[in-house]
Amino acid sequence: MTLFFDFVIQSASFFITTYFIYSLLGRKQKIAYGLLVILILARLIPILQNASLLAIDALILLIVYDVGPLVFAAMIFASITGGIPMIKMKRKRVIKGISDDIQTAWKQKITAIIVILGSLILGVISTLIFEKMMLYTMWVVTVLGFVLGIIIYLQTSKITKERIILLVGKDKESMYEFVIEQKTAKLTVKDFFDDDRYIIDFIGVVHVIDQNKRIEKDYLYWLATSEQVSIQKPLTKLINLSYVDYLDHFEKYHVKHLWFEALKTGKLEKVKEKLII
Image 1 (cartoon, rainbow, N blue to C red):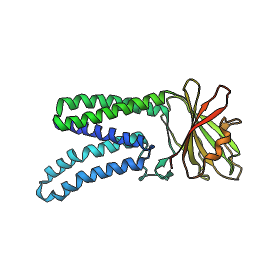
Image 2 (cartoon, one colour):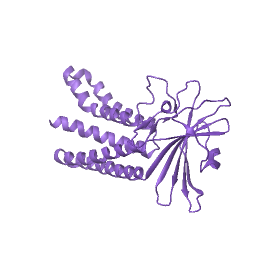
Image 3 (tube, one colour):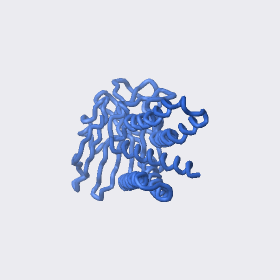
Image 4 (cartoon, rainbow, N blue to C red):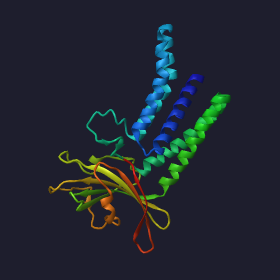
């Protein structure tokens, strides 16, 4: 039973640490997976180097209990963040490690709750099992995970509306929108535009902050073609876009985040711009 709890606690700590780095570095999956691979190799290589000195059953148990928590943490991380970008059963476009799938505010909020509860459980179990330096290490992981979960939850709680904005044309002449329903966990391009003849580029995210600090969040995609494209439901024609004058800030093969504050006059003021890739 002690080995089981140790396995679970290590898996949770590795997941929390990986997710913290993933969130801190702009949701770049490849960096997070690179960290996990390095940690797995760091534990696996010494075991394999001494494999000839161990019985086969002892070798298997050592791999399971020493490397297994990292592998399990990677599986949890993959399920939450939408899979492993380097391994795809079907063709899927990823720009330099940034997936064009949408992890909605609802999914981020659920993830935050899981991280918060997981951190508390991790801290309690660690206190009962570990001592000295290992205990202090687990406490640090617990605090980091708890703080991360609180930050993510508070940030996502401010989001009151999410939309997909599809820009069509070489110069973004036409605009379409799709309002994301509440409690939607994840969306892919095919959920709002399913036509393999065209390539749609994920180009950025816009946050519009109102006077009460509530946020409307738009995910921008661009279908850069001079052809006449038939746009079907669930997308609908969009006539007005409050930040239309800033659309030239978004470019093909780049992902940029823009933050605006809504003024009392009804106009928007850009307060922050961040190039993700």
